[in-house]
Amino acid sequence: MSGPERREGSLDAPTRHPIDWQSADYYDPGALLHELERVFDICHGCRRCFNLCNAFPTLFDLVDATDTGEVAQVPHAAFAQVVDHCYLCDMCYMTKCPYVPPHPWNVDFPHLMLRAKAQRFRTGGVKSSARVLANPDAMGRLAGIPVVVEMMNAVNRSPTGRKLLDKVLDVHPEAYVPAYHRDDLRKRLERRQPAALAAEATDTTRGRVALFGTCYGRRNEPELGEDLVAVFEHNGIPVQLAPQERCCGMPKLELGDLEGIRALKDENIPELVRLVDAGFDLVAPIPSCVLMFKQELPLLFSDDVDVRRVANAMFDPFQYLMLRHRAGKLRTDFSRPLGKVAYHVACHLRVQNIGQKTRELLELIPDTKVESIERCAGHNGTYGVRREFHDIAMRIGRPVMQRIDQSECDYYASDCPLAGHHLGQGLSNRRPPTHPLRLVRMAYGLEGPAA
Image (cartoon, rainbow, N blue to C red; front, side):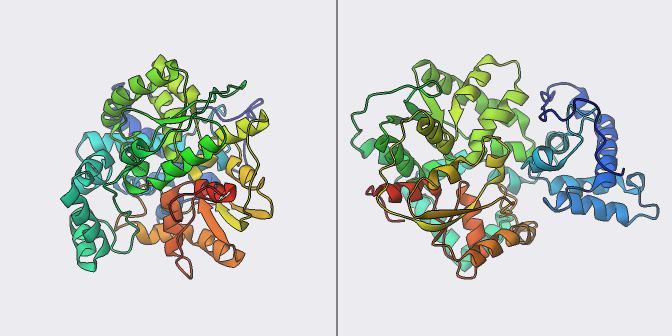
């Protein structure tokens, strides 16, 4: 192939087809193998995605190692290596591939990898350690027990404990593992004095927000939710935490556990629909969780009207705030400049196609310069913590780490908190990130927990 071969009209925006995961053909090994060979042959002939992740270099190395240099000569068992290195970031689909629908070649690499993962999960080919890492709800329940949470944090902090995690859960000894908080987000918000705010709707927002706290935001970094509430309420937007919530399902998506996602969906969606019916918009502080509700669940459950209603009501926090700004409702009484901010744009935020709303808001702060870095940080869910992939994940993130080091910034930030901490491991001074919500709270001069 000499270059992108598009039919007339294929310069339209990429479109995603519903995922037919409940059909028998979806799990047919022969049908999957045929599609893997077809798509891998297209990717081999194009190679535009060589620098996105390790899935494509793995594929190209396998092809180049054959006598003929063709996909047909690659052992089928080796295809699993390519699947292992895809963490469903969607960047190939959204930013690189010229053959996505509506092109007649109909290439959707991430969802083909999802199909392969789903077949492997269904046939029992997933290690128990990966299943544990993909179940943050269970880990969170353990962390709610006072004695247990201290034990978990002690294990995370000690070299001996990290060796144990490596042995039991395949967690790399040098990977960033977040602490757990017994004093979680729900307890913290229940103690606060709710602000007496009146909802003020615009053409695009209702002015009342229900916060989907996320597994990570509830137990590992509850400051995320506290900062979000402080910023939103400073702007006259009342916030309440969703009364009940389970994991959004993104960790199980990365594993291919589609039935597990259905179970989580059946618990989350009715609760979120009730909030939408009560007049709330929905916001979550983690890009992957927002993407799960806005894109993946609607594609997995395309006939579920309630899933679509939740998707239409779900916002990234900075998308929401900038919609308020466009309507003249955002306060710009910033009292503290931030200087230079190196801002990593998380992959699961980029593929939402909403623009760089975080950067736009930060640039409203006087005497603040934002340098955006649009490249993968390398963390990517559980990929960056697993023993077999951590070193590769660090290598993927190294260009971002170097950009941050060279920027001489006052702060560096990522909307994905785990990506931010992963980047911090590779910086020359290993300093921690400051989340964009915390930066905005600081710029407003609002009191809060220490950064």
